[in-house]
Amino acid sequence: GENVEQHPSTLSVQEGDSAVIKCTYSDSASNYFPWYKQELGKRPQLIIDIRSNVGEKKDQRIAVTLNKTAKHFSLHITETQPEDSAVYFCAARLTGGYQKVTFGIGTKLQVIP
Amino acid sequence: NAGVMQNPRHLVRRRGQEARLRCSPMKGHSHVYWYRQLPEEGLKFMVYLQKENIIDESGMPKERFSAEFPKEGPSILRIQQVVRGDSAAYFCASSPPLQCGDLFFGEGSRLTVL
Image (tube, rainbow over all chains, first blue to last red; front, side):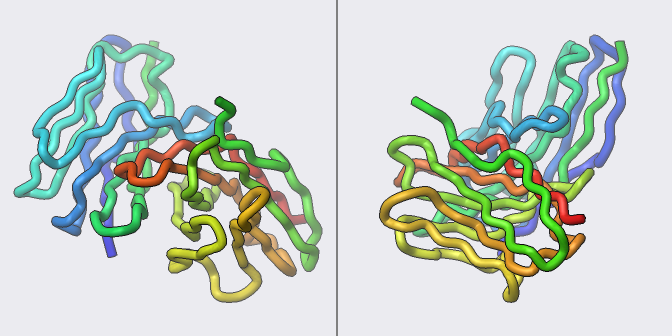
């Protein structure tokens, strides 16, 4: 089955700096890579995703990149703000007739004011 | 359009009791997933269901745990004879058919076993 590795597990940045979270996946058949943000005590929420036919996608201060050859993808947050503090999960989906999504272990991001 | 609804939000059980967690997917969604999250840990896949079918239960413990998604009504995750190690947040997510893995999560059910 698919295996998703994520690092770092914790990340502290000063407000205004950039944050980068990296993930690798094992199954080259995976073709969909969402990122979820989970604030303390709340549910994971989809913040951005990328599909395997695209190398990069941007949405305001958030961008994701995908390298299919190397099987890794990254989340970039620029101009970080205290409200960006949360746990971020990357995920990968296997293709086929069924839609299991495998998550990374999560990165706890702390933005220091 | 109401989101994914889970209940109860919090559940306290003593060791040996049964826990039943319910999940109503978003309207129009026919796929339901259950994930378990231990404190300070990631989301562990448990089971994936469609109406009246268990598609993948590879992440669910073989004993004491079961899940169903009947033709009518919510999906239910049932844990029999709970132990302290079952204390966790259980998240349900749903997705529409023929979509590429867009998961929408409920608020979770937090189980505490005393």
